[in-house]
Image 1: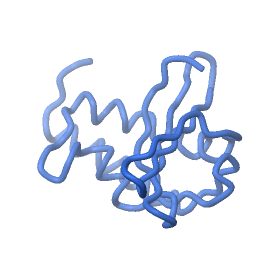
Image 2: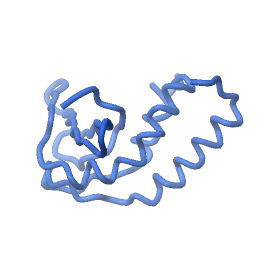
Image 3: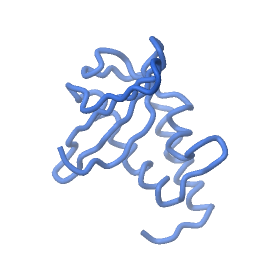
Length: 127
């Protein structure tokens, strides 16, 4: 991937944020619940933590797959993977083939009995 300057990266992030803000809450059959798209998920796409940004290539890679989030969340019928951290934080992975050769993983998070929140999107190697 060609190196990208800060201005180009900022433009990609702004465009992705505009799209992200249109998502609202999406019903997910695999979770039998709505998935909330809030600032936590978007920040996780562009930052590793509060203090550290993702590299431009890693950030762009996630933002490119953002366009598939609606399809993965609304069409996934089962949870591909579930992880528990401690006794209250749950991560769920949905994996869905969106087109030939393109398999996408969406990561969701639930803390305790709270809402299910979108956390990340990325390519997935194989089903």
